[in-house]
Length: 176
Image (cartoon, rainbow, N blue to C red):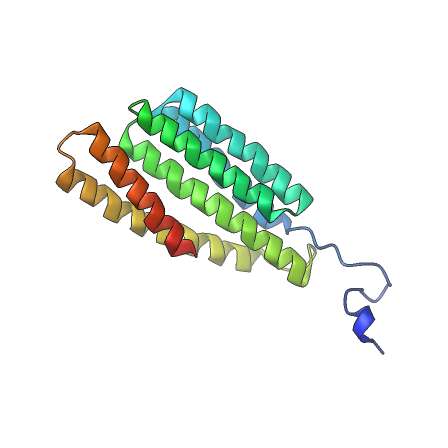
């Protein structure tokens, strides 16, 4: 018979592992790597800064820290802004932004799943559906931003940066 104090323990009496599931960590780091690659294609210096977010996502996943994950996302946003400021092409920057948002969202979701059901629970389908939903929202948001860019930019780099920042705000609000 279990009591309230036993809810975190399994039948063997050991504590449940509350780290994020491996599937969430791998998906998050894969998306962060894609963001770094896309950022590097846009502008190598900006891509290097985005690559630092990969380290932060790994650290946040290993320590179970949502704050470190958020810092990783912030570093990635700075890297994308640097790449845009250096004249990086819009298309790889949008891919980097979507991949960065998916990396952060899946990593954060993994922390939540780990806390609720533990690392060893069957979570692959849950993580896959969550990642797919995040990717869909990001892709639709980027399509709207890119369409606006094509319609209004007229080749002006300052306008492109402004539209990308607007898209980042839309993307962030869609995930919240």
